[in-house]
Amino acid sequence: MNQLIGFIPSAWTLWLLASGGIVTTLLAIVVPARLGMAIALTFAWYISLILIAGIDAWRSKADRIQVNREPLGKLSIGRDNPVILTISSAQKGSKNRQFSYQIRDGIPQDLAATPELIAGVSKAATIETIGYTVHPYRRGEYEWQGIYVRQLSGWGLAWHQWRVDAAQTVAVYPDLVGLKALSIKLTLQSTGAMRQQKKRGMGTEFSELREYNIGDDPRSIDWKATARRNRPLIRVLEPEQEQTVIILLDRGRLMTANIQGYKRFDFGLNATLSLALTATQRGDRVGVGVFDRYLTTWIPPQQGQNHFSRILDRVSRIQPELLEPDYLGAVTTIIKQQSRRALVVIITDIIDDIASAELLTALGRLTPRYLPFCVTLRDPQVDLRAQALAADIPGAYTQAVALDLLRQRELAFANLKRKGVLVLDAPANQISDRLVDRYIQIKSRNQL
Image (tube, rainbow, N blue to C red; front, side, top):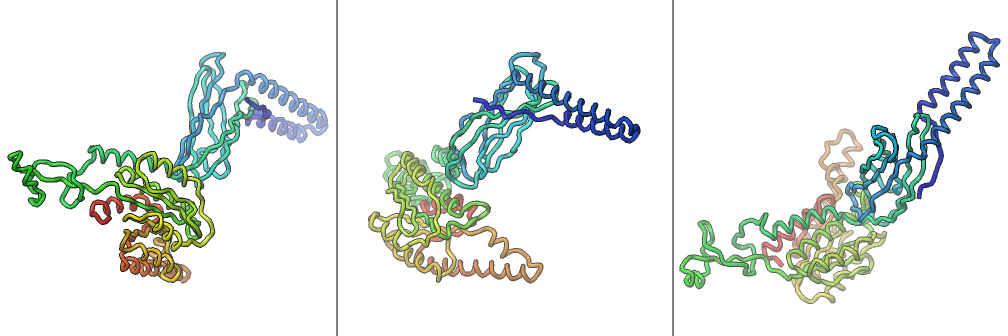
């Protein structure tokens, strides 16, 4: 349903109105005695011009273009998400007739649109699609309002404007675009399109027999199969499947910090989903927990793509809280839930030994029964401040603070490593790729 808003004069009409004022001023200077007549004529000019512009705008109602927004699906945080509009021009009149328009979609205030205003020209009896992108910085549900449209009248004297009812509620999810790209990459690797040659030590689970090639390790030769086939064959091993990966995502105070316009928690959530997707596609059982003072969300370990879809639906709307996380309580709960050996990944941040003492104690409790893995999300801005050359005294102080923060983190990581804890500390905007690579490395080295 279209709601009429009204008409506004075009730039051409404003120029004609201004010209009347200029003529009046000139007449008043040249012929002062005719000032009253000049004012009357100018007033008549204004009235006539406004009346003609109104008629022109009213006539253009029959030629209004039709604008519709294609239904919006799930949007990805941190990505340029396309929004498509369809424009149908008036069917009557010459095919060479053109309609100038301006369109502004009623996007939520928290979203950045590029471009905000869409301007163009449409020919009669045509259907075209145009688009813009929105870049969400927060997850959650957003309300799209109507579409505001302006169309230039036939004589070019006025803009006819109206609003198209197109209200819609749209959910912003974690980085679905990145997850889709990762899924395609993993699928290609598993189907062999990007498969690399398997090497000795890549796993413990038997995969296949193949002929011996120059450079293969003689210790991999299967002598019984060689005797049966009368040619040398080797056993190809691959990483063991159906292992268990537990991901614990901190949603406490440190995860509420802003990094490059996003919450640290959002980077951690993207990393959680990337790791869960990779592990499920590799045949492992994946469990996910989200905690602050308590383990607020717990998804027991299972296998398969359907399980990953459940994980995505359960965790996508979770937001961080200004609460101190209870690492020890979360780990204790997991130990009670999970009896078999597992890779336990805690995604959080760390400051120093003193502030992170509970985290160090909790991770220490996991060894040697489990394989603990501490993943921390570093602010890239701290790295830049530590590496920048100070040009003044305030800059030198800033650099010194950044260097001290990095040093304190390194001391905490050294204590974790001494307790047998695996550590990954990476910039928050790189953590997903780094974590997936590290998981694959852990699997290939049979550390689990």
